[in-house]
Image 1: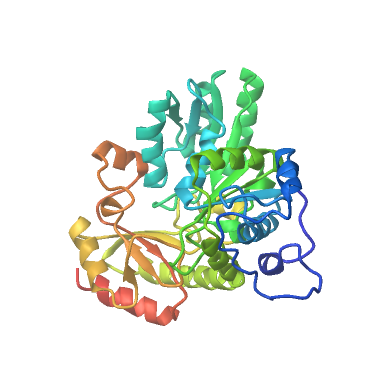
Image 2: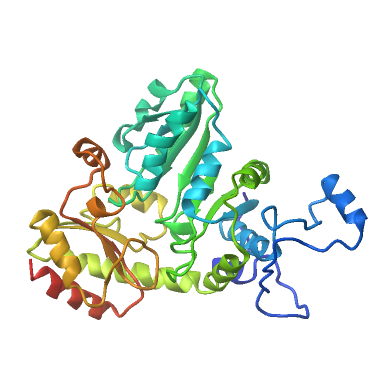
Length: 398
């Protein structure tokens, strides 16, 4: 996929529409469920596969397509399809690839919703998920069989902000394909990094899934998800989306279109603040450790340097006192908000054992690298000195 001449910010704001034309500067909200035909020939054209004929908003909608086109441009991809949530995007993309009897290989550190989809839902369809640790990706070839259809990972991981060596993962999958004769689709959840800081397609991945609720939306006021890739792969996902029904709403698309205009400004500011906050928290006596890819103390800092252009705005802070200490900190913050999401302009904190990884066994938490005293921090766009002081006074109360 060739890089575009225009900047990321320009692509996010205009998409391909870099020409003057009359009409609204802002893309209109096509808040309709169905569309008026000029005459019955439109229905005939649709039945013959003409993609320019609008029929029903579960199939396609101009407001939604505007955002899909911009997301594809931003990721230097051929196509994108928008969904009603990140999990709708993930589940539909995966079910478009696997069928009963197939196998998936995944790294174990995953967003809790994705992990529970793997653990609780896919077995009902006779789909098996095998896990390979990020530090032993060479084991992929030992796990691959003729039934392996998908390699899935996220990096940085949710919530531990771990880094998967994406170049090595792709190399090992290619090696396993050659050895087994299997064709394995590679898919990555790029939510934490976003296209501003990581370009999975340039590394060799086939599909990107992302919770557009997070940095793409960026204002904690919209639910959405996206699948991005080649025209062929996205067409397959889009076809299944028509039947599963997790399609994006036109008004949600309008909010996303608004958010894309400030995407680079927001995420860059949040990233810069995250580095400053991480360095400040690392010096706090009541903090056991700070996991942020931009810190030299991060176990995979060198890998992050290799595959990321920036380190994002997510970090994990482990404090003294276990879950009680973590709760004390979250309840004592005045600027940061105790809420279960990420990517917004507000700094948000949550305790993984109470949120994304609730109701998991000790063995599962260990597999995910989650401990009771961990606090996930999504750094917002507030003044950084205000944030540093807010965390300092809250941690002091442990």
